[in-house]
Length: 88
Image 1 (cartoon, rainbow, N blue to C red):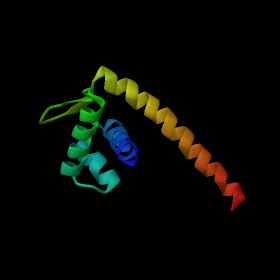
Image 2: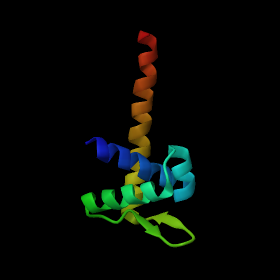
Image 3: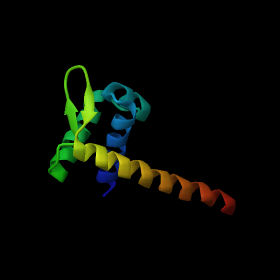
């Protein structure tokens, strides 16, 4: 669904940046909205993806595996969209 893709993209940004604050800035949303989106994603999936403390955020084992797959998949989507430029 559209919500899943947006939340997966948010999760990938958090992993890439290692910070809710930096990921929120990159995505142009508040840290509160980003945290809410991640909680919803974890709830829908039934899997904890991130370990959060007041000072740090780190992916769980499941989160690391998902982040690696998302990096590859989002990269492939980006390449496919770039290839469309030849049809403009």
